[in-house]
Image 1 (cartoon, rainbow, N blue to C red):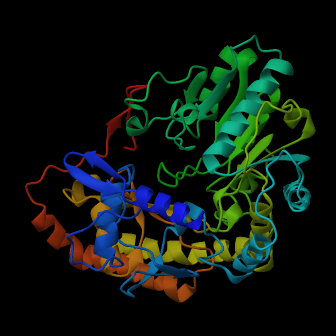
Image 2 (cartoon, rainbow, N blue to C red):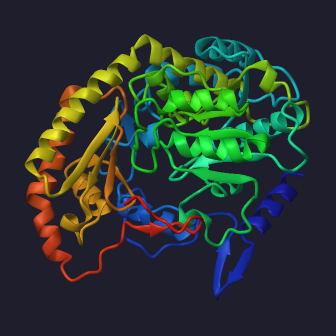
Length: 476
């Protein structure tokens, strides 16, 4: 029996696939002629480019180890993280309390599916609902899944509670929004890269300008009897950390109540202390009908998302109508509870607020020194962005700025060609903030003039994009 098994394994391991004249084995990696060590940054980037879909354009740095706000690449070079995985590691990389919770739970039980109960999710559900003042939670994994869940709940509520005719429920969202890249979500998007080639997009979506309560009121008056929900980010992240006018969120709350429309806050990126409040909606002390959480809920360790609502909304979902095999799994539940503990015990809300004030003071000082380059510094808490003047920056892009920051040991990510987001872990120190600000100052003073000379004559990438939906130039 053992000999037969060995022969079977040998036959499988020597099986070959023929593709474009190349032969590859199921039993191992294809042979490489590269003399570069397999663990080097260069080789790892090459491997990803060769074997992974090209749906991202990363800054060319390889993460090998992380602690707090610090990252090391395979060669041991040290960086300060000013992105925090789009706010997924608010607590800092590999926080010891979160890692301990992971290790303890992974040795006991990792998955039950929702076909059965487990001994962690009910405790997590009680903790989360009590913490945010809602009656129920529906657990998922990724932020995009959380958004999809909220949309389904809103539509179901709209048909059953508001008596919207079958298949006529409408969701209103905002121009410049980002809620993920699933088909339902891109059907709301103003990002042509996210929508072109993926049609037909889903019907039942209307858009209004972010921050414009008058436009929202107008569309509610015209279509309100068929509108189930208004989905929005309290602070638009991907659009470039765009903060709405003061009083906007309160106006939205009043309009949603008046027209019987569910107010749905996507706090996946802005929530959990990122903006200097536990939720960004807390800046105007309003309570949405639904809140979507994700990213930092998993502490940067496992994907965890959740939709919060009261019973009069949530109980319109019945068994079999929505679910997730991994949603509410015991490992994610244990990690999420530890992640919430860290936010509370280390006072990350207060820390984000104070560190954010420090950072914006430093950034505005840089703006004063380089007024031709920097158009605006904006943010709340440690949710910040620097927007550059496209004409004075040209032909250099925000991506080029991030490449120069990387060479100076600071990791950030651009958005829309002229904006650099600065959203470090909330555990970052004042010294690290100053180091990051100094790097940006040095890039503008030393690197940028050289970059402009090198790129002279090149056609700059336009930051103006005509939206396929409305025909307007966005992010101007």
